[in-house]
Length: 448
Picture 1 (tube, rainbow, N blue to C red):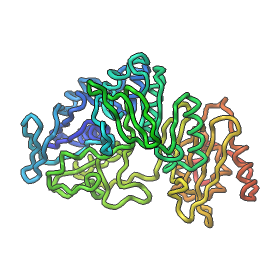
Picture 2: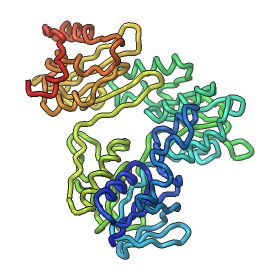
Picture 3: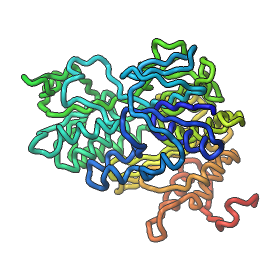
Picture 4: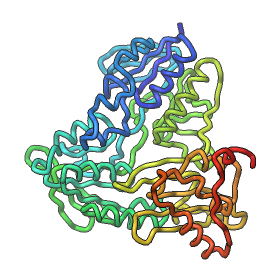
């Protein structure tokens, strides 16, 4: 019986295992040193905030794995010997495979800061990170202040977690506006304001220089490039993540920033594949990045690879880019591509609308000349993924999108609607006379 070994029990590794089992009777082994069972990594913050317990983040009962004949092995993989079709664990155990899937995810970035390995210094990615945060920042009496280094989604999540326990937070962001390498300036400015409204000490244009230690080897302060020394008990390193592939550096598998793969998710080594955060496409797919550390792409890769491993070679096709997140109280969604001013293409134009009082805004990207709709960012307005996906596939114009923007609104019935204001500003800026309309649901997905 063919034996498929999967390194990593995150969403990618578990998805490929589940779908292989649906399609075949192959022997399946999942190896991970993080936890005994798969859990939803995106829910870690809600455990700390008291919204749920850890067992609530496990999508499957513990008996699920045995019932579905998926063997779980807890351990660290030390070496992969592709020539012998064998992996070696840190405790010396050797496991043979016929096919190997690398799904080891990401690890928090470190940039050689003095003191970055002190106790109380951590990222926010693994279950162990959550345990450490509970240890070093259980309350505001134990943790007088925390310093978070690096903007972005993980940093804002960690700030929200700490503030939920009334712990003071200082946020060091090297850019001159929050996440402005991703967000257009209007949206970035909105998030700056929202962070400060939550009593977070946001310090823009500020870099970490050093983390100072107390006599017990724990973090006691950080030093910034502005010359400030900030006393703290916890330092969160949230300056992005990178593929967790150090254990492969002595193997003959081709590596870049991640494990290099083709469209079939094959690596350079025979019978070895890579999926999820640790996989790097040789060539980017459209405008998508070669590495995408996103939950849903990991799931899609796992489902796709299962087809290939079960005799139906299938290329990975992620479709149109989308993502969603939350900045404290403000929900964020993006469909298609809306680049920041630094990343804008020469043909790209933006339309931006922001509510005069509330933290609500949208930015629509389109082609300057053809008026082709390229993408949308929304803050504080929920939109329907399937409609924007359809409009992107149909290559609709920006005028069409604005005319039928009401169709995409997902907010509950009694929420205030803003499409009238949005389209009025669009008409004023671009000299159009669009009248917002709404189709019936039966017609939205017809050819009408």
